[in-house]
Image (tube, rainbow, N blue to C red; front, side, top):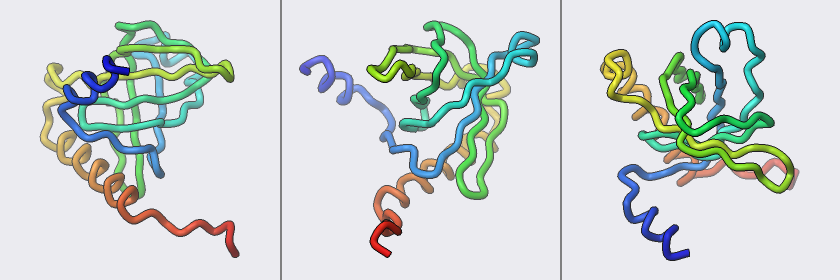
Length: 136
C-alpha cells in the first residue's frame, strides 16, 4: 500500500477513467498486420500512457501501435511500449503502456494537441457524468 501511494505521488499527469475512449491495439510490422488485433477496453488514460484490458497477454518492453478515439477526436498509429501486463481474476489481462515521445514521429504538434483534447474530453466526462438511463 505504501508503494502504491509513492507511485501516485510520482505521477506527472492526472489519470482519467476510460469514459467513451475506444482503443485499438496492434503489434508493429508484418506480425501486427497478419495477426488479429485483440479486442481491448481502455481502463484509464493519462498524457503519458494508458492501461487497457484484453484477452491477450503482452510482454514488458513489447512495442505496440495504438489508435485512440473519443467523440470526434481520433489519433492513429501512436507508438507505445508495454510497461506491465498482469492476469486478472477473470482470465483477462491488464496491460500498461507508456507512449514513446522520444520517437520523432510522436513529437508532431498535432499528436500533443489531440492528446490534450482527449484529456479534456475525459476530464469533462468525469466532472460532469451523463445521467444514467437506467432510471427511465
